[in-house]
Length: 125
Image (cartoon, rainbow, N blue to C red; front, side, top):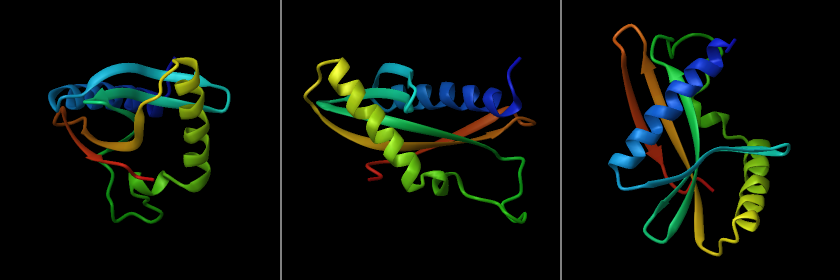
C-alpha cells in the first residue's frame, strides 16, 4: 500500500515526464536507485544529459501556513551530495562521457480540480 506522499510523488513524476517530453527531452531512465541516492528522471536534450529531481506539492496546501517550505528549498546540501554520488555512479555504469546538469522540476497538483502545473529550474548547482 502506497503512502499519500508516495502516491503524490508518482503522479508528479508522471506529470514531469510528460512536461519534459513536450519540451523536447528524451526520457532515458526513471527511478534509478542505489543505496546512496536516487535519480527521479534521467533525460537527454541535444548532447546534454539532465538529471532531474522532481518535487511534487499539493496546490491544496496553503503557502501561508506555519512551517511551509517551498519545494525548491528542500534541495539542501545533503540532498545535493547524495544526488551527485548517484549521478557519478550512473555515468560510470552507463559508460557516458557527456556534459550533464542537475535540474529541478516542481509539479503543483490540485487533486480537486484534477490539474497539475510543472515548471523547471535548470542547472541548480
